[in-house]
Image 1 (cartoon, protein in one colour):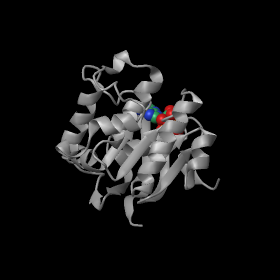
Image 2 (cartoon, protein in one colour):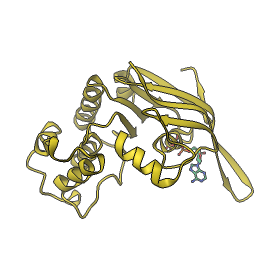
Image 3 (cartoon, protein in one colour):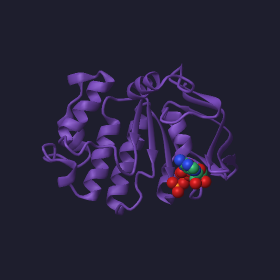
Image 4 (cartoon, protein in one colour):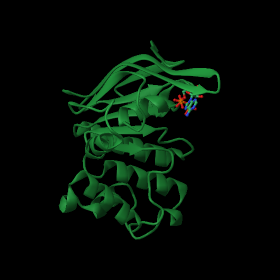
Length: 221
Ligand SMILES: Nc1ncnc2c1ncn2[C@@H]1O[C@H](COP(=O)(O)OP(=O)(O)OP(=O)(O)O)[C@@H](O)[C@H]1O
């Protein structure tokens, strides 16, 4: 299977006052089509920073990221956004849905950004995630578990090649966790690559392999 995300020698540090925090130290990784990879590490080990650098939401201070053959890092914000919209679906703990749009409209917006337009059936996507009949509701009218599944619907919309998930099942009941994981897994079976930052053993068990981070470095198990 071909490599869709390539991260090489990534370094990232944050400066707060006189202090520097090294969030990533020489991190390299490949994600290939069809694989679900768990990103595991203690709080503060650099998981969110790595996801942000891959997604082009942040720039690494050293090294580079390529997504679907195009350079993501060290480009203008507009170029990074365009590449992200086209190739990356993101599932965060919060903030992936627009509160003033219904679930249906949230998904349509993503499809529009990806350019898949009317090809994909929104009702079917909602149905698959157990949200049939919730399409006309605003995210604020849904439960926590429904919002989480709605976030996944948005991440899956448009059939993008890469899924980046940051603690997608934290604080969810086991039923919702299982529903979300099985949909991520299914999308990988269809050819996507997923990187899932997690503390959850259930996620780690379901993944094809795991990348462990400690103090910003990739370590063995
Ligand atoms: N904007 C920032 N400014 C300063 N330091 C930051 C910033 N963002 C992250 N850090 C620091 O960088 C390190 C890595 O943080 P990061 O959020 O990537 O870890 P994480 O593994 O995702 O943690 P968690 O599991 O708690 O979400 C931590 O030491 C954190 O305090």
